[in-house]
Image 1 (spheres, helix red, strand yellow):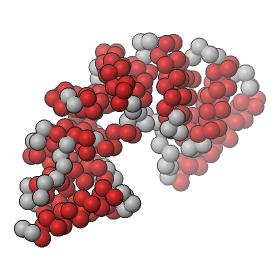
Image 2 (cartoon, rainbow, N blue to C red; image 1 turned 180 degrees about the vertical axis):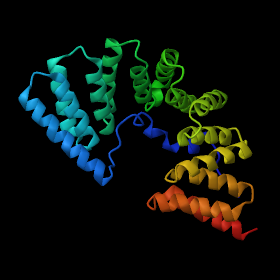
Image 3 (tube, rainbow, N blue to C red; image 1 turned 180 degrees about the horizontal axis):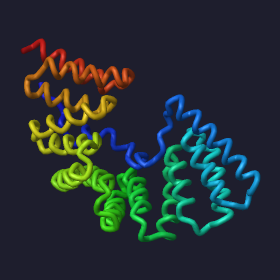
Length: 274
């Protein structure tokens, strides 16, 4: 039985690109209490001095950390009204809208940040990440990734996501080169290992793909796409016991995903015919 090792299947998780720089919404109990305290503190600061945009920005960041996106947007917008020339305020809005999956609004705001601070690598990177969500804007995204890397060659995230975008375009050799750079800068990046593994899978280099995908799932036990692709590679090598285990892990992570369930079932059927 054959299993799909195409890049298209491998990079199924790429839609999340661009959110990696957003503040995580999940918090431990202690962190949650710290966030509540920060919100209370900055609310008091904005009430005491409502004309200070920095207080509104700090409140917006606290709301964002607490996953109260609408209030975060309101705070960042207030800061922009008070000072429309600070690019970081627009960056805050871009992050908020990115979290809401409002890519158009996120892109509009990050473009303003880029205009105000054209030499800031982080803004070009965020712009590139957002553009990469639209297949029609991949070329523009690649340009922004290259600008970000030129401005900050040691930003592993820029190399990692640039590589993933090259992979979407079908440039697997370019993707591998960028992921190698990313892994040199940050060896324990689960995503870079995943993108490297997916690129090798796209080239049909199963041994190399399996090495990087195994490393990915060691670092990130919640990457269901990595488990699924790893399972397919193992099955194609006749490693059915290991393949079933990997495919089951993908299903356990997302039981409602039909593709994961189908992969597991196909591997089980194939294993019984051997």
